[in-house]
Image (cartoon, rainbow, N blue to C red):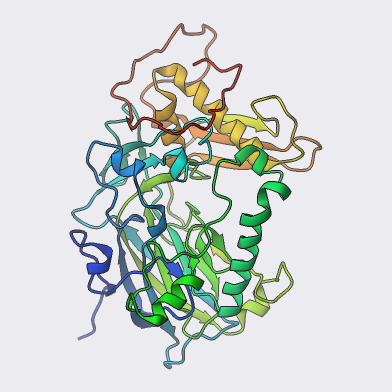
Length: 451
């Protein structure tokens, strides 16, 4: 009799540490990290994963675990998984790997998540110059819905997705990553205009042995030491896919990933119950443990046929994806606009990041008029199903970005009215969990914003 249902390829026990799992996890990209299993095209298989911190951030009602989080360990990934065609021939460099998300969700018995901002001295976030303190909100899941006792009066359906899906880089591609990111780290403050506004964020996260886990490769061996010094951090998205944080990669989506090594060596992790466009607080989706049920197809020679290199080598390509048919439906939105003028009134030339920062700050200041703290709204806009857009990128000198918020997620009417309310309509307590900020960097103030 035929077997039905997905085969469990990577099991997870949430009561165990990442290095105690039955199959070892990894938190770096490198072509020599060995696969933990293999699958064949057409097979539906299940991959389970820890949250990105590997259980380091808990559901305790305290933000201390956020303040002192170890940034060197992110993200714990399940895999790599070697992919073969129906005849047992592995995916080859130059192929495209089509990965279909058949099903996904939180791990049974672990239906909770968190949204947070890191301390400014420990990674910060998109608005770290305004919000330097470590904060945290715990979310609980009711089927497709999420609610938080730390942001009361809000409930919304999640568009659950993996933050990271990617293939292993070749050594040539890995060297390209490390060289260009090293140049940013060494020269960025002098050469990048963006750093004038977002300067308080790390410019890059270069290879480091601290916090490194390489799957089956035994720590302490000469091989581990060599690979750990070469392996790329998982923090940014790159040519292999990786940490792209695209909220629409949900049920029914299909991702077309370039293949750089034999077998493709597919890895995934960083599961999100819900996320707003931009994941602006950095630890900003509703982070959780979870599972994916996947099916793969190999398109032979697909990189050359379908991906146009945007760089000096054929490796400078980017994935393609199809949006799945399942997502929350909202009919009414409140949209906030931002232009590329910063809080000091300084004009920036067509800078979409500055424009989006202004849109997010405008939304936070507006929503705080309805009984919420600004920290609550910062976390909410990072994890609720809001829609970010680059609305204009052609009209000099101002880029225009917008942030659209579904009004139905609130239990009160947040639209502007003829009669302006005096003070908050409803006082929302308790607030988010938070720590004090013990650093001495200046905090940016918006001169026109009410405090």
